[in-house]
Image (tube, helix red, strand yellow):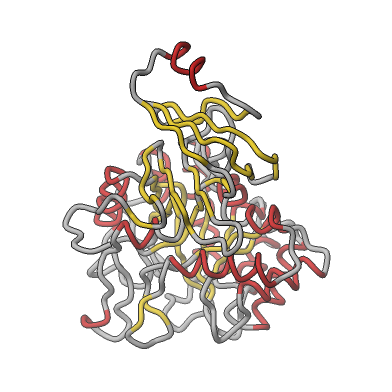
Length: 385
């Protein structure tokens, strides 16, 4: 089975102009100025295929959201506040083709094994998934009893997180505890050929990023192995995040932020002050409890903040696009399979309307999941898209 997208404006995420993109099964095979369909059929002897007219549309890599509570989250206000498992349509309608699942605050009624099972289910439905082992607390939740062995031996585990600091819901981990977790993640990543990321939840506490700064200063861990998230939750923390960027570190901004610094405003400030956006990612915190009330954070916020930044802020489109494609793929060691449009890469292709950047079509692993703005595939047991 092949798909040939014709005459589409191609962003790899770097702008390549009008191109044809040939997909065979689940891989991108060719990206050229003009691909002859007859030659393709003769060369690959594929009887079935589809030619898609991409004229007037933008094509780019499917978005990567490295912080989604796929198996549910919340629980801070009792059993009634536990959020349900996510449905695939909530993910794909945001243009997302790859998610990293996180456990979060509740490691009592939620488990890493449940998170892993949900990740495998979503993969069978048609998107790509990874997970972090761990939870807010320290000692943190694991599947095998150690962070190291979870990362080294379980295919979908790319790191540990979200470990909480500077938050009344955290276990207030000591420097020694954080150092031990980082050592386990680093060694597990090396043994398993994984990223070995330490994904850190940063709350509204007065210390902010100070525990991470102390860990970096008093250890030999590479600064890029840490990915602190929610950095835009308040102005002071955002300022600390800029200091981390100057040290060569990564920061993750949370989409849909209303009380702190919005993602579009944060990106505009960083760009105007000369920061490279290469070390910045954006995630949705999707399906987690939002704002301490009965609302649920939406993966859709990722797309909405991207649209807002692209349409309203003076930031180059390619730079914005990297924050949800190339950057997370590199940090997670998923590049070049993910995060780019290139021959040999996975066929995760998002097609947007240029005037409003809404989703026109989404292809994940070579399969069309959204066509003409509407999901064409439902998750098992999902009643409405």
